[in-house]
Length: 441
Image (cartoon, rainbow, N blue to C red):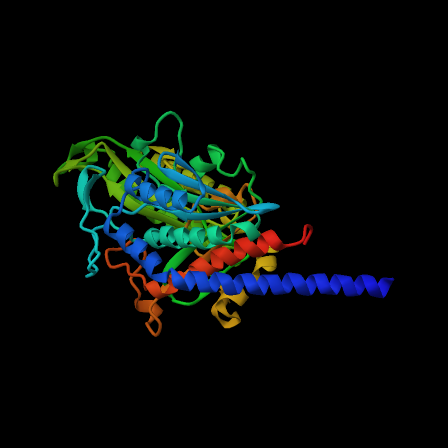
């Protein structure tokens, strides 16, 4: 009887394995067939970029595509987000796949036939608008995954929720009203992970410095928590020729910037976790011979643990306050000033379960462990609620020098489109294999 049971169990396991192999073959075939379509979508999005919470045209294209596939669609989520629900033919868990939609206030320099020529006013100044972080690619890849999975609907053991999210890069504080947040945080607040309740979430970011055809991953803390900050130094104005009559907020601000450099170098246990404290903007005064009343500084904090985050914020407040007091000035400090993202934390158990799927999809040699990165991602808000994995997809032309790749968020940002199909395959296979996993595995 025991031998019969083991034989039956083995046959079931082999059958499940055969089904998995067959589904991967079908996914590969379908993804390859729509490669040109995915690239065309990406180029269209790239040529017509939209800033956060203004992705009206992009959302309309996405919604029409999902509807054409017979997918249930909800629009206007978190302002301009789109959510599609594909119910499989068989019962099972709910898997969410996410893509971000927004572009950046960057003027493109890349010489492409589909380069952005869009201009807008941002923070009081005219600027170009550009997909300088690959969100155009992410939308196109997830649209491709939706098309492939829709064809396989009757064989899916569960439900797939397609999350097209606005405003991953955030919006200006003035644009947020009535206590609303932006991006993933607002989508979670509006129930994107409910009805039906999501069991696992997967997302990806295409990287300009990572070779096309590769996928990188990291269990645990992958991308940093981020807090922005505002420090206003208040002094006393005077004629620049008579500085002794002033309490100089410019000199005080300069001293605060220098003193803040000791937070990471002297207060952080750097062998445990990295961290960053950066002042990115200083504004004060309008004339060479007038000492102003105030100077405003803006900055960012990046950490990988709640303990480090708490310690660094406390040290910044102490250093800024005491430095100002030593000069007879005062400070107002806001941390966070307009946004806070938690650590992008990939569930280690889920990573271990899904790693074979990634290796089967891309080839074992093309799936690589990566170092933690001090960039931030609001995908972390989904991972706070449900287990998730955030992957990094290669977008560097093969044979190119990664150290010379144009950085994200810059006018020269460039992506090789040959890696898109791997992104489609990876998202599809992650969803299918997760849904096919026996409960408790």
